[in-house]
Length: 121
Image (cartoon, rainbow, N blue to C red; front, side):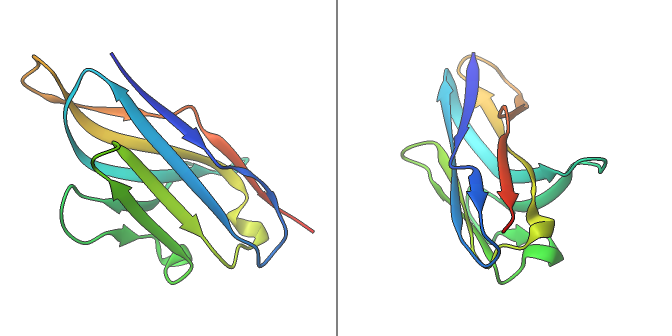
């Protein structure tokens, strides 16, 4: 099986920074796109940033210039560096990854369990 485990959430003041990490483990053959989504109370889950196995990352307009997504393919890990945080960034952040498991001829999208980010003074 495959697991995505997130870490790095917490409480931060407006203008502060946080770094989220998400490590994939299990019977992994290949990891394609990896990304971060978030869901605020009463709102739908939305894409924050996405990064392919190679190529340029995409960002939601609301986070462009403040957030940076990166990945370490050797560690099967994706990161989200969040700077200049605003109260409206408060949400549960979920990572996901498009993964082909060993011995399987198709890809599956996996999700992490979510990590809370709260931006408040």
